[in-house]
Length: 557
Ligand code: KIV
Ligand code: ZN
Image (tube, rainbow, N blue to C red; front, side):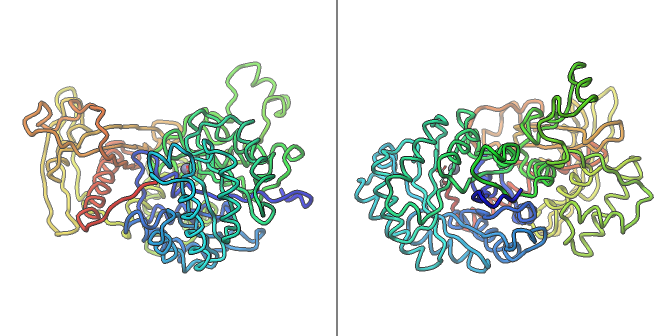
């Protein structure tokens, strides 16, 4: 949608940083790399790959994305350059150095440093004066500039900061070398007119404002993140900080697909154009949803399952006569039509490989390809039509359980008996750290899944609290692939509680703010899908604990 008399809207994606700060979301390095590759194909201009100082795991993920995804050009031919890789850093030298070390191998890189500017944050969180704040910001930007050319500065909580103070600090950081100024409505407090007016005021009153790109970063606490970002665009914003599906801290961030499709649908209204490959939106939305465990609400704009369904008779009649009656965007424009494209059990390796390429999984190694092909063949044996959604579910599953990530426990065998009485499960697990193979059996008062989970809990020697269990059918029919998403935490309550048998039915949310871990699994057998999801979550819990035991600290923004 290039339009030369308009400015390009720069897409800065923060799914892997602010998005990953969503409660309970813990992506593995392999999952982050897969999402980063898909974001590159989507046409994202700048990817905030993480917060390197937060933990060794975050550093490794950013470094690998910079090295492995930073140079990729696949699908970006029309943009003509690879995705720029950014890392986040607080306005302190150690963070900035660590950030630089993580992104240094990317051909195009950016350091994004931030410091709060609202009086509430200065007084209660940082306990510094406004003058100290300016001095710190200048020092941080100057140091970042000594390492890279491209430096972004964010005055955190700008939406509640004094605007003349913002002009002062922003003028100072431009002088120190900042090239992008990002204006966060950190707590999602602003109204659209208010946010737009603030941007206008800042651009008009900041010295050197014409030398930098102005960026919007809006949170969705009042459901206004998209409206605020768009209002910003009308007032001078040329970069938007967004996430896929709008995931993020609390109520989330601005959803990329919403801002881009608003600009796309109103080319004459907005002073910008975009270069996003919009037909990939649906797929990437599904990938992020299954890997993050954050379901997309069915009525979600652009990528919700109902976004292109017409239920009422009057609407159906209108659409049959002319789609324009009730469709402002065609499903093809965002890839919502591709979900029904099928493969069958007679489809060979070539057809499968070409479909994988279309889905953005063209770079699988021979071994990974074989694993994917075997899963596809097994599914095709039990299911007549394997859809693109099925493939995405299988591939997401493969990404999260692939060898590069540290899966401590893997399932060897699973046997379940269920009927009108208690269900029983016999589970054999291998501990990949020690090589031990362990077996146990348990009963489930409420069914086979409870039996499996109880046996697994005993085998891994932990008391696991099940906080969420979602099961969805991918597509229609009795042969549909079952996709399970779970959230767990470790139960540290006393041994002799009523839940000591580990029964799932006894486990209810006690409202404690414990760390939670999600897991997902897909299989045409829902008990196997549930088992994989549960074990996937336990493996994340164990990996996180191992990091902590290695003396890791996890700093969140
Ligand atoms: O919301 C916020 O203020 C942030 C900054 C770190 C940019 O995420
Ligand atoms: Zn944020």
